[in-house]
Length: 351
Image (cartoon, rainbow, N blue to C red; front, side, top):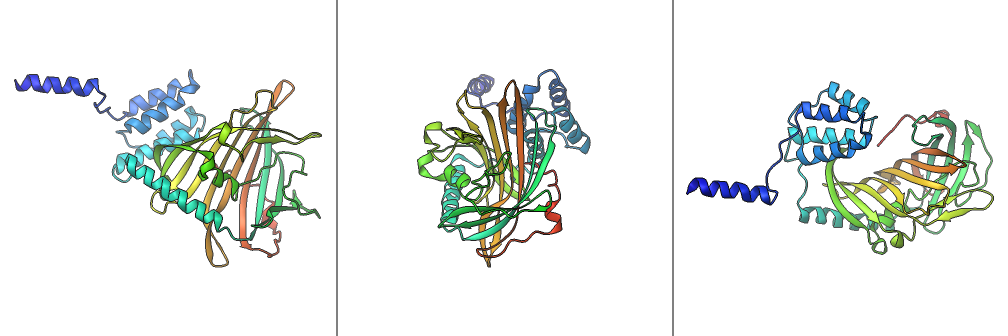
């Protein structure tokens, strides 16, 4: 009778998916990495297995190097294997939050973020921008120029930009609402717009808890999010030229939330549903945020951004990249000055 009961229980658990998958072995993981040579699209399968099953082996520097080489230095896969190692070492600290806890973290973060954005001070900051380009998909970036831009932000005027230098040469330019007057790719919205559109009610953003992660030594919960084309009123993409062109777009991305302080540490997104006939074929951006000091008060503001856009030109596709470092936040009215190191190329910083 007891054997019959146990057999029935096992069959029940198997039928309804309650069996626990074993963690990945080292040989399984290495085999999956080598399989990427024939199927580069298999990265998502490995990432899913790492998040779902975890690992039973110690992550060594040799395995880290193999991961980089076989996966084409894929950032998401590298983060997934590192998180799997943390989860192996301390399962409780890296455990996914329950459904109710995930919803609570998200709601507290929404309230905190909108409150911080509503209380944004007037400030000035220096942007150090390194621009480069490549044939789309190659990753072979060719440096174009380095810009130093003074940004003045006020609740009355929004963002105001003044280009101070290009490739180390000082410029006497006018203050404008953007720096689109420059040739090449430009971006904006990092201070308020990119965060605000994710959390405001009108966007009807859909969130889904994805994984945990360690970012700048802070424990985070990572959520997938999506803003449908019809609800992304403040989104879209533009293309400079003799006649300015634009296309509406939706947005899909990830957001890293500090699970202890309920504040955003990073967003990473790509635009979706761009009109097929539009020359811009892809746009991605990531922004790192932190609390910065302005006149003795702490505010949530960007510290690093990486913007990329792919444009179709004749039968070729070109990708532009802007890496933006935000330096020396100060109170509004402070003069932004250039120092020698401002003209140095940006160090290679990746999400």
